[in-house]
Length: 64
Picture 1 (cartoon, rainbow, N blue to C red):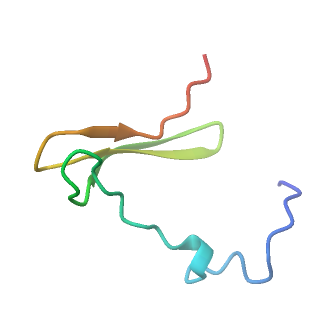
Picture 2: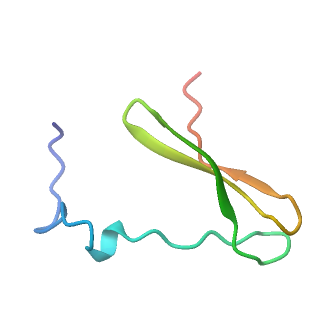
């Protein structure tokens, strides 16, 4: 358990801070789609791919 001071109702999945925003491709401006996901040390990360131009964006942390 962590000691973060979350706002009241933070555990509610419908709360505005739990909404995922669309990731936009930097090359062509289209919405990117989730290509891969994982959890490293309790951090959820996503890798996105643009189906139009093939651009890939990864949020995977580098713990090396």
